[in-house]
Length: 249
Image (cartoon, rainbow, N blue to C red; front, side, top):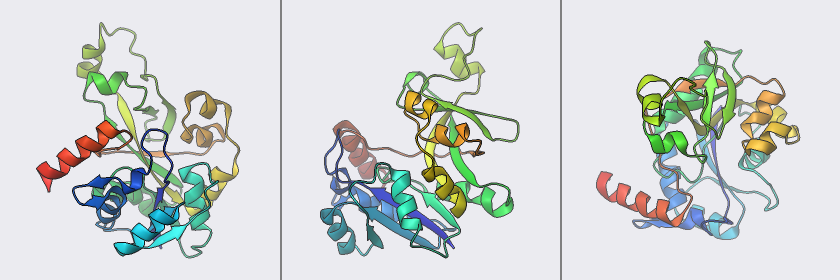
């Protein structure tokens, strides 16, 4: 069974109560849930929440929802908590709750490598950087990968460093730089292996938890996508999401 889990936490330093933020008549987490449900490969979708307000809201729009402890530190740990109760789930997808309009094809793209190659235990997505703002933003992690599309490193810096480029525009035009899209698909055992490790040195330095996997020798398959998603982290992002909905739905 393939299960998609959407972690939703009420507390947020930049946007309190973010999962309940209204986007044109629906809470954000309902938009996310409905977008994820369009996946052709997921057998089940679960909202993993930490607050009764989120739980009650999810129930009101008919979602499969599970209450998880407030003291769980990361979305990945919340996913693992849910997975422990899903003994038949052999593939688990971690889908960010703050991406209300995620395209279902992106979820399916991340699942497919695990269906066709049983040696792959974790996959994620990447997309070619198209703008200087993306290139320079530390909030948009970059990824480099080998000739078999397994991740070599993730960083908030621009990687690889293009030594001979005159400026950022030349990097964009002449070189392939990829941004990481934080959607992960795990085999069950790989998820538990990852979340049982303590945070690692590079992870703490870059503030990127996927580095924990690499530091412990876990391999992450990188799937290149042409699709895009909108992440809501701030009040400004929320306004952009509302405008996107009005223009596209």
